[in-house]
Image 1: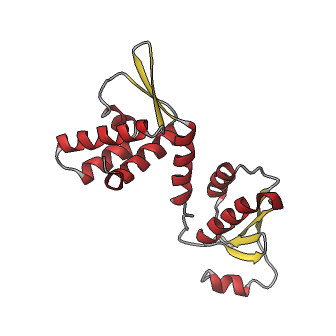
Image 2: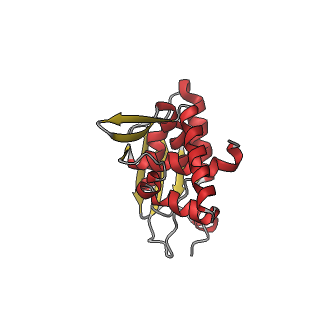
Length: 192
């Protein structure tokens, strides 16, 4: 199987399994997952109109995922379970982080979200990777480990904490209705 052609499908399956956990199946056809993971079904229907080609692509993708030790198939009393391996969870988590973005509401609620983190020097690579992702998400760096954003991002921070193996003491969110001299911030985020 040519992975570049099926990378999006593999990514979608891994992310779906990460969100749903193990998928139980009573069928021998891997098309069952499209029922458990509706995004996979939509993706396949959109990309490939021909049913036989769709099934072949699906089989090939599952074969690739199994061959590369990203998913497990287990049979328990005639029921088939598909789950992510440790490496599969890691890869799916990376895909989730790669696709992470903060949804902006139509109107700002007037509150600033301040993200602070404190990661030890011995974990410098982790700290730099986190800093890069925070910057990519569009937060404004107020100080070295203090970042500001005008919109809610609790969900996104929870994912980042989990992915980077951080706890609340290492990475916290503060919500404030006022930051002294916030003109630079308002200009940066195009707020009135």
